[in-house]
Image 1 (cartoon, rainbow, N blue to C red):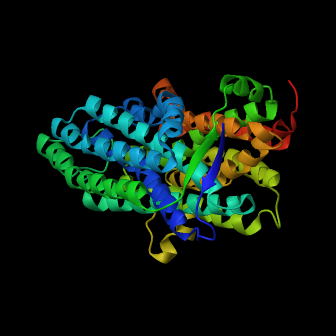
Image 2: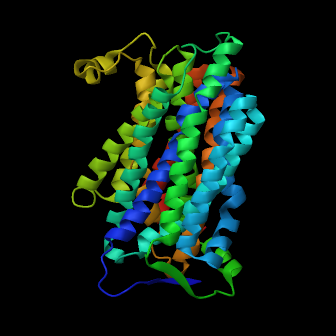
Image 3: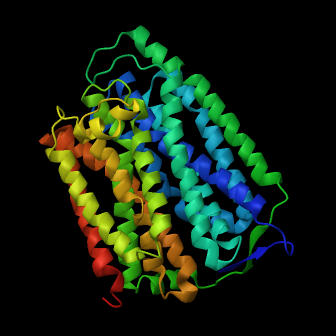
Length: 430
């Protein structure tokens, strides 16, 4: 299956970039809202950490369920229509959070999370190739980085807004809430999710009716299954898919469980903790853009990411919640809050994670030629790793490692990322 861009000659890519940028911002809003909604629901519904981890996992498991159907849908309706459908599914799913809040039923929240994850998968499947193909291949990496910055910027802004417009009843995990407190928390969810649904419907209309170029299929590959089998014969691709899955797992842990950890140690502003992780990730993106490839290769950036991840996880696990050295150095002098070192080390994992995704992709796709499209689809499926990360932390917590010790389970993921950076991406045969 091959694709091409259908566009008028000499037309600027500014409007297509605006469309794609808005889609990536919406993706960021929905994806990184998980870090704020999870501890909020954990508190409101009095969930255990393991039960709370299913809120995040139900969102990411949608990639496994909807990945292949999404690709089939995009093939039938095109990329622009696919973006519109993905947005529409997400907007409709956002409205389900309103009855979920009124009923205060975790089952309805999980169903809404699953459906909004399906919409996100459709949108991801449509917009990623659109960004790559809207201009020259030589400038594709720059466009991807710009989209990534918009996605992560949404991750900084959305948890802060969520914390401002919702009601947190108490500051500590395990505290008993009155029914009035639970009702107040539930009611505070209604207006934000109506606003989210309305905003996404607007972007769905933008994608559908804007006079923009689309990607169309020139022909249909009659041997798609054969291409998958052929692609899987390339070890550096298969190991890259595993690397992407493990990376997304640790990225989601750092961004979406930091709020639950803050709740566990009694931090009042737990809902906005995801913003700290995403802020660190934005800094990592900016440094990566400045240094790669002029001063640092993608491979070396990946090596440094693996090493930084291992060291930072060790600091999380062995740090003291009574120590505030990092915040005294980086936050308090600028009017920021005093926060425990392990909590801020979870946020600093965002910096360690920043360049993993952009570094693995070119290494995994290198030399694949006509198999690049199929290989890209396989790499996208690695996003399903996000479903496993929070569950791993929840299980580790329940198994006796505790809220802090459970983060040690991230270390094998960083070891694999380091292995892939050093030698796995060079493997040409099994």
